Length: 537
Image (cartoon, rainbow, N blue to C red; front, side, top):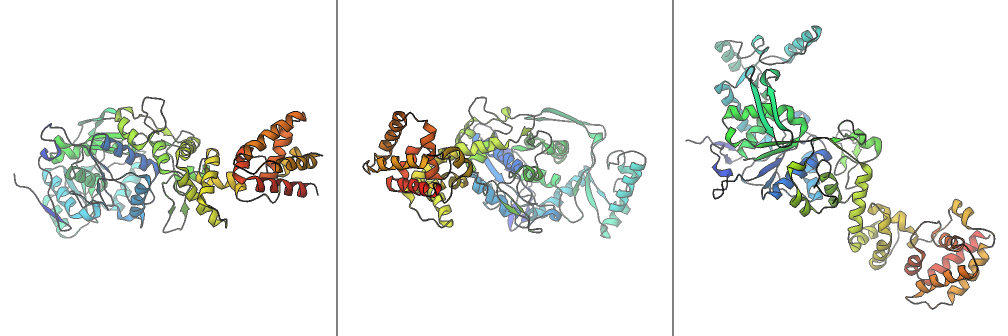
């Protein structure tokens, strides 16, 4: 069989005519090849990130390939910078593509606008086979048909029941069609659904799906601007790139009968990929698809990275800039719609790959839970290396005009990170280790500083000064305080909270023995003395 060859960007693109290349010759098992194919129309939604993640996990589980393809055929919705944003997002998340846009590979180009010469040939092939036709209807003519249908309380659809009465190559003579084409009359190429035929396919998540062809409209495959629609480009590219499984959002399920029919029309049924349509990510309330408005309304990001709209200048928050760790985002998204069948919730990427299976993906939408997202980040923050967190915290301190050393900061981080869900909360939970209080919380002051407190603390400070300034000073100071409280028949809060108030400026913070140990004898006692002097004025 002679191969049909198209030249694209200096490369030869050979349409697949047989399926031998996608099988392991020794085992005759089909090689797993999946793609994530976003459109550069704006920032990447976390629902899209989850789709990419499931594709990644499936590919790695089966030793296959994870491919990035940019679907930019709709030039009217193209947004400058969106493609770079997509690539940067996955670099931050740690999800590496095996081939694709910006990476390279044997099946490029991986951007559909660079594959433009390919698609017309395939559209014309469908016309020649009788699976598609030219349509010359103007937008105004179609709008008039819609309004007429509305007036009759009907819904207009360009399909097997209406197409014969519209302006296309099925209703026009061959001579008139050729005249319109040669004169440069604008046209589109539409798919020609057969009448009253049952279209069936198996979905790995939804099960067996059936649809009657008479219910479907004849979708546009090729537009008057010379670009293919998603439907044609998607099928042609998946075939040429030897995609074995199409794992995508459930919003594409209604389009799947068309895609199945396109594989049939091209004669590619033997190598048609398996389909899996993922459930939606839902609003926290559980009703409706999660949107940017939900994030704005409830104060959480729906994009992986911060995004600045190039037209309006509007800035949308991102998980990275909000302080989320990439591993936490990946872990959180993996469990929004999939479960391992165990009670385990914290997974490394390698563990997710090992345990992942499409069979355990739910058919139902997954509700986004902001508190659970924070919980995941908290877990990963606790497991994070103290030195790495200390380096980040040290940068924050420098921006605040505070000089410190990495060893001291690392010691502080080890004490306070259990109270934090985000690294940006380190300052709020540990500021007193770097700056002595200038004033004292009014509510705590009224509750914890009673008549005679200053005199009692003065006596305590005098005793603490007698303890040798050594590594054991903090433990010995705590032991003295416990004995002092017991011997004087005092309440624990009367003493410890007034000391904490003196050193921290409030009643929050780590255990006093840890505060003593980090600040040291001289600084701890100095702060108590200053508090006595200020409060007793």
